[in-house]
Image 1 (cartoon, rainbow, N blue to C red):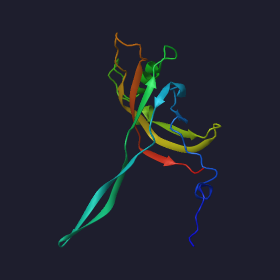
Image 2 (image 1 turned 120 degrees about the horizontal axis):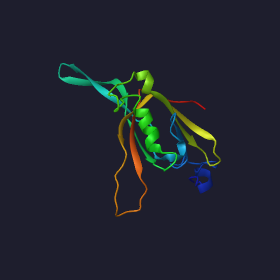
Image 3 (image 1 turned 180 degrees about the horizontal axis):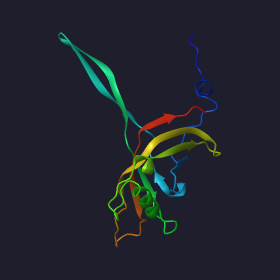
Image 4 (image 1 turned 60 degrees about the vertical axis):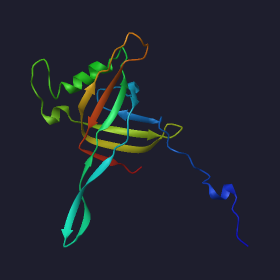
Length: 163
């Protein structure tokens, strides 16, 4: 006779999912509480094709990291818009027209996912991060929505740390 398992035997007793709303992103100079949305890193591999007679073989080529889209609230004080502009001016200063060295504007960023009690359960270290695209948001007399900043974070490398 076949064995019939109960629901308790099939489910993990200590299952607790990671939640999309339990995270902290630390960027030097930008307050973590102004962040609204972000994403975990995404890796993409180029495809290398090896042609041989009448067949093809596919190999993994170079890997690259996709930029991360971030949305921020823009409070009156401290102004997130001003802090983002201070970071971007290290890359290009619109007042003087000078560009900066990569060592001026590239920063290391850390994304931490948390459990229900606030303990860190996942850490992503993003190296060489900089603001590739910034939109300080639109304004509209017809709505009472908050002003938001959208920010594209480009980075060189990401590492998921062992805890």
